[in-house]
Image 1 (cartoon, rainbow, N blue to C red):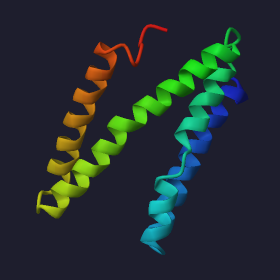
Image 2 (cartoon, rainbow, N blue to C red; image 1 turned 90 degrees about the vertical axis):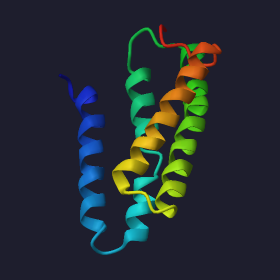
Image 3 (cartoon, rainbow, N blue to C red; image 1 turned 60 degrees about the horizontal axis):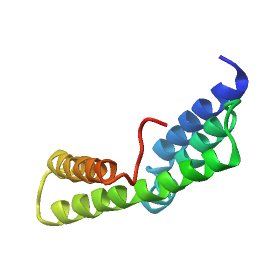
Amino acid sequence: MTLQKSLPIITSIVIILIVAVLRERSRTLAAILGTMPINMPLVMWLIWSTPDTTQPIMLGFVRSLIIGMVPTMLWLAIVFLALRGGWTLWSAILAGYIAWGVLLLVAIQAGLLRINQ
């Protein structure tokens, strides 16, 4: 594995470690770091570094990221509402993932997301 392919993985690990350390000092700062747009630039970097990636391919990929954010925001809203309703953390997360998965399947079925590219 080359450094260019390893660097996004190493960066992700470092960010997770920083969040783990900072959560003891400031949960607000941990939340800010936890919601930073880190994975998207790392994945865009990996896609862009593929030899056959063109500008139109990258545009389609970023469009898919935007569409994929809708189920992710719904996931977070469901987890919030479930926790506020007294659910356990794991139940709330599971409910969020079920809704997330259903919305992704709907988006794929509607042709908004194409997996076979």
